[in-house]
Image 1 (cartoon, rainbow, N blue to C red):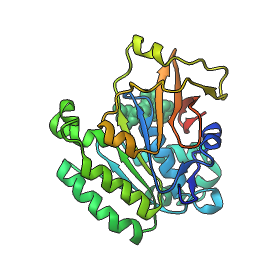
Image 2: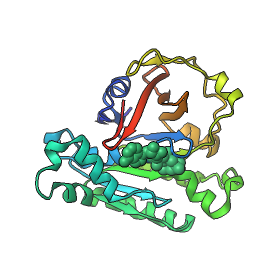
Image 3: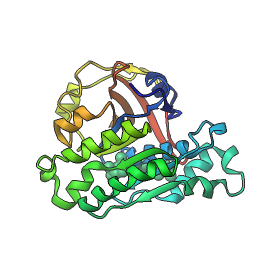
Image 4: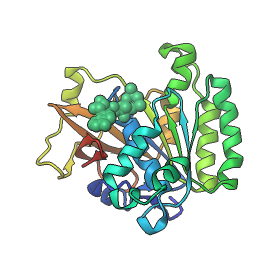
Length: 261
Ligand code: ATP
Ligand code: MG
């Protein structure tokens, strides 16, 4: 149950598979190796959520928890200017749109916890239409190292974020980095892309051994999981978990105008 709303990604095949885009009221996870494009995707979504409804946006504010300081307003403005020139050429629009994205940079797990509690209030007071956490695993691994991820199961945080999504009925997008697969593993869930822009069905269970960085509690809390990966020099976005779609994979690129299929 997504409470009836979606944030369109403007990646056509993906929006179609998701029945409109990133659903409101539930958690959507973006997983993939370093440099694959998770943050690029989140920046694009942040822009789309802040656009006026007349331009297909949600006309809202965005809270972006930028754990590793990877967000830049310069890049956000570049993506907007290149992908939506007709809107961004309007004087002051770029600054207005970028200004709607509130960036939080918690320096520790403790600060992250405090941010979440403040966000619960802010979402309602400030017309927030998207919450991004980039990245969840980094909150723990930065303080305690990668090995600590399972011990610090983040049980309270996971439940809190899930209930935030349900209460506020906004889309909540969370990234997590996974190490790139070894060749062997890649074979297990190998799939063939027929042609650019065309979706390809992948065998069920292909990501069954994809290491869920935050453990089983997290894996179950997530409603939509999008796996980003590179294969033979091409990037793919795979709809790995969805209550409404079979597992599909779409090739994508990253250019100055951001992520696109
Ligand atoms: P990490 O897990 O380390 O945070 P990530 O999945 O968030 O990685 P991104 O930072 O989203 O990765 O993506 C980085 C990639 O985006 C770079 O490898 C680069 O190829 C691409 N990229 C960034 N800016 C541009 C640009 N202006 N033009 C083209 N490609 C770009
Ligand atoms: Mg990133």
